[in-house]
Amino acid sequence: MQARIKWVENMTFVAESGSGHAVVLDGPPELGGHNLGARPMELLLMGVGACSSIDVVMILKKGRQPVVDCVCELKAERALVEPKVFTAIHLHFVVTGKGLNPVQVERAVQLSAEKYCSASIMLGKGGVAITHDFEIHETP
Image 1 (cartoon, rainbow, N blue to C red):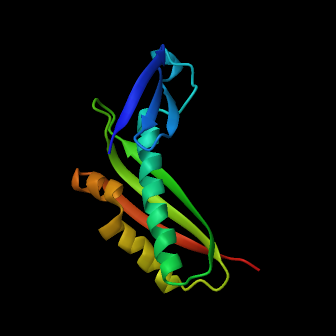
Image 2: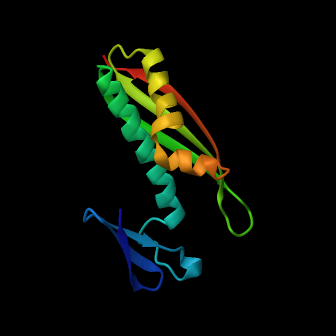
Image 3: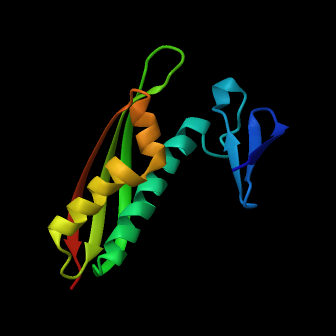
């Protein structure tokens, strides 16, 4: 895997993935940024949520669950002093479908947390307290 980060101006950067996709990152105004993109730590948090969400949806689809939507809401806490690392991350999944089996949804979230999501597992091994929960919304 590869990536390239290019400085644009002030605290604005463009990150390009090895697969050719780009995202703008920027620092806060108090550090010279212009609020033109996500902060690097926000991007890291979004990566954890996306990694786990992909797992959950894939597992549910393989289990032939009628999932039509999956939203992962994340809340993170950071250390107060430098380096301001994540100390805790909570992932809350809102899974929507008609007749979803709660046991299978719970299993999908658990498998992502314990076996498949390399991003959250890596951070957890680094000392970040990572927790998960879910709710199911029924479609009419």
